[in-house]
Image 1 (cartoon, rainbow, N blue to C red):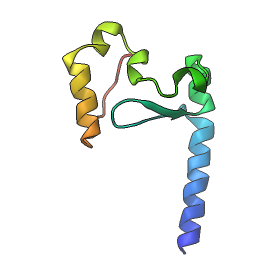
Image 2 (image 1 turned 60 degrees about the vertical axis):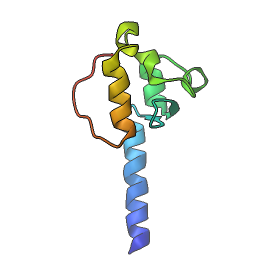
Image 3 (image 1 turned 180 degrees about the horizontal axis):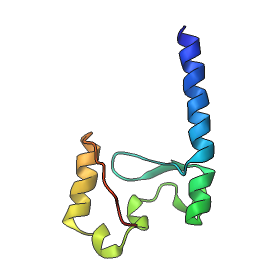
Length: 87
């Protein structure tokens, strides 16, 4: 049954990609990839954001704050964050 699990996972992944705005980051906040929904919602092309830091999406004062630095440090250490985040 391993193939059934892989196929189910791929189907779920495709469903998410079609229905959600998704962006992927390295642990340090560098943008790896974003799907079409994310790019459309944010008004960017992948070439414009790939390789840049998440900081480009936040207020400049917050992006240079210790709180923001600590946020990415804790994510890089594998800590989970769940909250409503201001863009």
